[in-house]
Amino acid sequence: MEETLYNIEIHKDEEGKFLGKIFSEVDGVKEFKSNRLEDLLRDITFDIQLALDEFSKRSTLFADEYQEEEIR
Image 1 (spheres, rainbow, N blue to C red):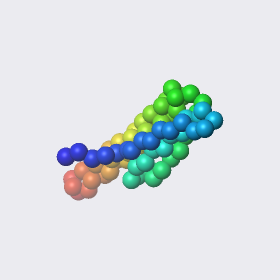
Image 2 (cartoon, helix red, strand yellow):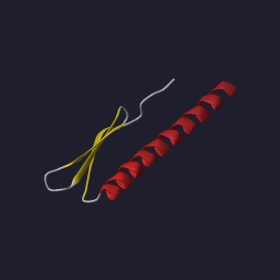
Image 3 (tube, helix red, strand yellow):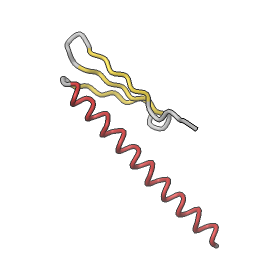
Image 4 (tube, rainbow, N blue to C red):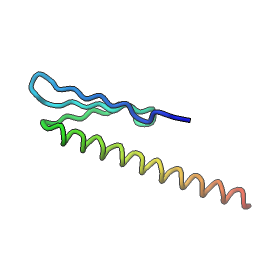
């Protein structure tokens, strides 16, 4: 089964700055700005990695707690 984790929009404004928005059900909407596209993509990628790492840690903790309860 496929699930969309993030939707990403990137636009260039009248001043030449890049504007990025990421949408997720967990984090809502986040906006990023940069003069360079590479920097914008780096910031968006870094934010998504942090969010997914945090989600992975929470899932692992939940699974560990669930297994401990089943053992008792």
